[in-house]
Amino acid sequence: MKPLQGWETCVKNGHIKRVTDGDIQSAAIEIIGANVTNNYICHPPDNTSSLGIKMHNIVLQLKSVNK
Image (cartoon, rainbow, N blue to C red; front, side):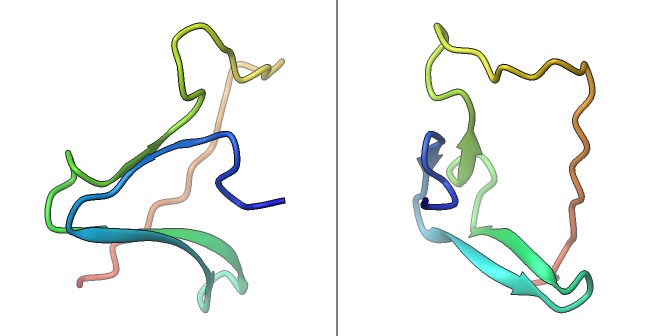
């Protein structure tokens, strides 16, 4: 399975790719771009779908890579 299968991605002047993060020693999604409004991922990809999450919380770990 592809890591971003089922996700909408938008990339202009940057990239979105799966990398191994050295700090957490695990796979991560790297989103790099000149403007945050032009480079993002979104799920579900349309307004008629749902994530199917039974719990009401989601945890994201964000890291600034100073690029």
